Length: 433
Image (cartoon, rainbow, N blue to C red; front, side, top):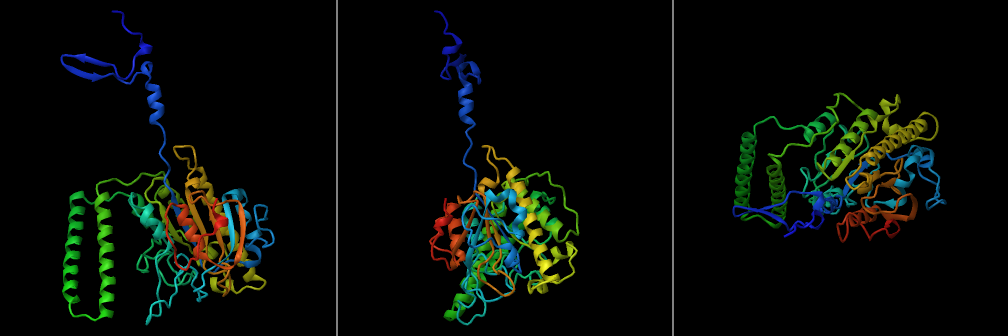
């Protein structure tokens, strides 16, 4: 019988010998090229979210675009001029405010939460979950770090107010932030030198301590009044949060951390150089899928010093003319230059499907304060394609539109169907592509 020509062979042909059936190797002649092409179909790229916040606001007259020039054909003002090459990648939004904000020096405490600090009877301070943590609960399930919080050493001097970072957990409690680039680098990318067995033992010990504490707390619960029970419930939630983090640590215990080309940072960086390096760490963390949600509470005081400005950050905000005004405007330009550099790097990182990292990242940049003691019209820039928002635009929304409307819109664009966030009243339909 005449054998079939090679072109008629298929993957259904097998080699048979001594009772054993073996599949043919991957030969292009029998159509493997078609199978290979099908196998290289790239899965949908993960979505990421980045929130960059700063204190003390901006210079109103030279940072905000002309309110009469809404739409795509607006002119970038001097404070945003360094972002010109990324005009198609960003959208400036005016009219957003947090209606409960009443502290002029708290530029980030409620920026991502929209909470009412007096919402809890008998308490002088209350906060709620920040939008980054609402996103991290979904986006961070499969990454080593559910979210990453970066910060600056002195929150008060930088106009941020209470809190350890921009992030607040589901109980409205502050989440610690790494305020040193060297510490952040090693936390994200340096493998632990401690033997695996020893690390496993340490985690087991922590779990044992938690179990003991939880058992003691349950015994105390008997006979407590309602107020004390509420406090104890909050305590239990804190313990459960720790258990969740321990479970995450155990899952990744034996997995080596991602290797990056970024070398170990030099110690002692501050101001402009510190922000730039933190931005490099953000790109590396997203590129390696170490995390998909990042916040960064940025410094202002050291930024001014690094620009050779000898004026205090708080004094700068009370500008009229002269040295204070010049310092405020130079601060705006420096921050915009740094943001443009971050967008450059996100755009340069190519994904397996040919798109860029920026195409799959939703980035928010701004503050909970406009300038001086004004808390309306929070400076807000949105960037990237991760949340499917309309870019290249200047939107002027009705005065005092809840800032949380923008956060809710971002959440929906990231695939998180939250009913509301903070004091939101609905999504910003103009933002949706």
